[in-house]
Amino acid sequence: MATVAVVGGGYGGAPAAKALDEIADVVLIDPKDAFVHNIAALRGLVNPEWTDRVFYPYERLLRRGRVVRGRAVRVDANAVTIDSGESIAADFIVLASGSSYPFPAKMDVNDSAAAKSKIAHTRAELAKADRVLLLGAGPVGGAAGRHADVVVSNIHSLIEGRDELVAYEPAPPLILLPLGPAGGVSLLPGRGFVGAEVTAQLKGHDLFAGRYAELFNLS
Ligand SMILES: Cc1cc2nc3c(=O)[nH]c(=O)nc-3n(C[C@H](O)[C@H](O)[C@H](O)COP(=O)(O)OP(=O)(O)OC[C@H]3O[C@@H](n4cnc5c(N)ncnc54)[C@H](O)[C@@H]3O)c2cc1C
Image (cartoon, rainbow, N blue to C red):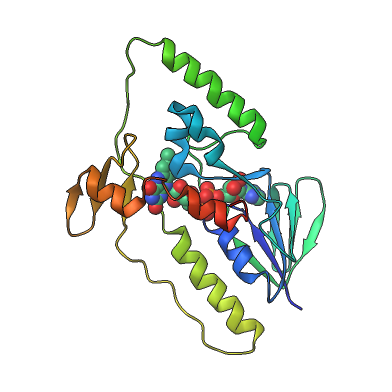
């Protein structure tokens, strides 16, 4: 069976690893102990009931494959070297190491317990503040899921000896901004800004947290 090393267990890497788990020996590499659901990060900051819904441990994601906790420091054609010095041989390597944003939008520590404690500390500081200055209100958006689908489909084809490789075609971004408890504001291609009702319908009141609980076999 082919071995696939997936570097990064975020929105792209985790679903890709799971989708390949049945047809390949998957090794998912990430320095974190849990997937971080960034979309819910700001709600997790202000609402303690949401903090746990930002973190989804990797333990139950893969049925056959394994998760290696470590940071990839070198990637060669057929091997990934992680920071412990271990070299992980692979027939295919999926690079899904994402991007970084400052805390609290994304986590800057790898341990979920430490991240939750930073969130609690920041929430306490916010609660003490008389005024809060929000700098920057630009949209953030990702197409990691669409990239992952293309990668998974191509690895399937290659393992099965078919030549049907699909090229990634960027689609207009669907940008959802989870502002406010009930949905917030969305900027949709072709439609401009839409309000809380449409945003809530699009995103669901749970900010997709249910979807990730299911992906990580936690529901
Ligand atoms: C507050 C916030 C709200 C957002 N809201 C939305 C939204 O509503 N809609 C939307 O489409 N997008 C949204 N985004 C953007 C979205 O989170 C990103 O586009 C998405 O995270 C990109 O997915 P990814 O898989 O490429 O990377 P990530 O999800 O960042 O995953 C990367 C993973 O790789 C790991 N990693 C990094 N370096 C290494 C290494 N060297 N070795 C091994 N592992 C490594 C990291 O630990 C991480 O787990 C939001 C982002 C933020 C911060």
